[in-house]
Amino acid sequence: MNHSNKSNRSSASAWRYLRIYAALWKNSVSREMSFKANFLLWIVVELLWFGLQLGFVGVLYLHTDHIGTWTKWQVVMLIGASHLIQQIFQAFFLLNCTNLSELVRTGKLDFLLLLPVNTRFVVSLRQVDLGAFFNSLSALAIMIYAAWQMRLVPTVLQVAGFFILCLAGVFIHYSLMFLLASISFWTVRAQGIVWGYYNLFQIARMPDEAFQNGLFKAFFTFAIPMLLVSNVPVRLLVNKFSPRYLLLLLAMSVVCFVISEFGWRASVRRYTSASS
Amino acid sequence: MKKYWHVINVGIQNNLTYRFNFLARTLFGFIPLVAILYLWRTIYSGKGQGSEIGTYTLSQMISYYLVVTIVDALTAVNEDDWQIAADIKDGNISQFLLKPIDYLAYRLCLFLSGRITYLAVAVIPLALFILSLRQYLVLPSDGLTMGLFLISILLTALLQFFVSYAMAMLAFWVLEVSTFIFILFAFEYIASGHMFPLDILPRGLAQALFFTPFPYQLYFPVSIYVGKVSGADLTRGLLVQAGWVAASYALARLMWQRGIKKYSAVGG
Image 1 (cartoon, rainbow over the protein chains, first blue to last red):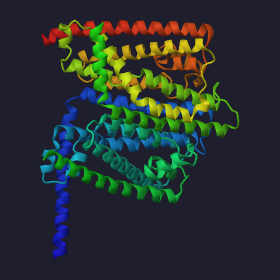
Image 2: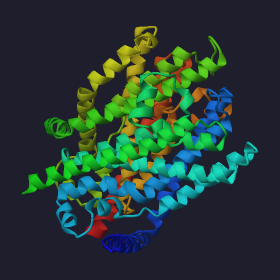
Image 3: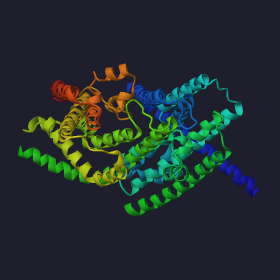
Image 4: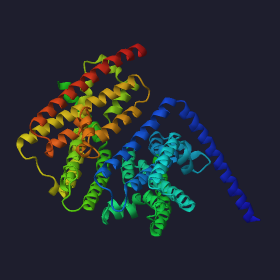
């Protein structure tokens, strides 16, 4: 009896969070639609930078026909997947992570701390970046084109696995970025953090075999797993797959989340004590 | 003249507040740089010993990116364009219409002080990084080349600044300039030689790019340093670069005048 009561309560609270999230969505939509031209221009900006990355691959493969074992269209697939993961991350989390320092600086966080919901939930999901959904479609289109160029027809299982691994990648990006943003409790300026994040993304786009074994590769595989987030899902799709790395990616997404939760709690504790 | 010294001085002190930010930016900036050097090394080793890409051997390629990093540290516009746009949007420029100080000169001083502070913070990590790869970095063959390289860097800095300034003037007409700044930045990033040396592009494309100002925003001084351009080509290049500086300066002034007309008309 006690048990069923508990599960009832947790489903009620999940339902409540879902309703809160729906309200946040509605808010974001009306905000974005009030600046339509700007909304479209941001999509152009993202398309341009995506095109630029693809252009770079094009230039590289004018001069070589393989990077390690990666062929041209496999790398195009990788850039597409990396863009997809980045855009999904951006759609849900990026704005909120970069806004955190603003919340700290202006003291608006006080208000969010007082709300009767999990603070990390509101802070992380307050705003939705709708343009990013359009941009993930362009990433998917490029990936499908690359598959067609390779005459690659993945199985349903591969595709499903790919999307699950992408989600793990999104989760890693979110956890790390949130952890970085929590640093703003100590030092207030956020631009450096955003900049740092973009630099990390440039590594996620690169084929893992471009790096010889060594400190750099080990660091970005085991400490900050940038070389896993998009490489592992694409390896599954293009049949370059190794189960060891699949498990590592999944494990890392859990580890990163746990660490970011610790960082967040330590930061909030500091915030409360600083303002009182 | 004294008032502008004062601006530089205050600018440096202001910027020093954000020294941690500058340092973080420098250190984070090494990550993609190291990654791209690894990428090229893998590509070269896949092609076999002593192979060349375009006219570059592996060590020349590494040298190219090192010089790009140095020139970029000396000349890149940091947040000047955002700040100028914010000044316009928030109405801060009103005071400059009353004071005997020229806004463009004022911003140029701030740009200069920004570069000085950035270098002061970045010089140690940058020097360590370059020292660790010093076997790839050779000095230009003679003093004259070095001198022309320095002149070209100065022109690059001015060109970068005037282009950003002109771009930020859009804030007189549109509410949100950041999208335009990012679009321009995308073109600058690929067409100025930031991602790869422009002469590994197909010949026609590389030549077409030289009709735009972008190569003169970074690639040109770097190519002087690594010895890819010399003699009459070098002199002609410097003249073209000076021409672009003059053109961007004229554009910056023109945009300001037009903008101010509209600004006064609205703001009253």
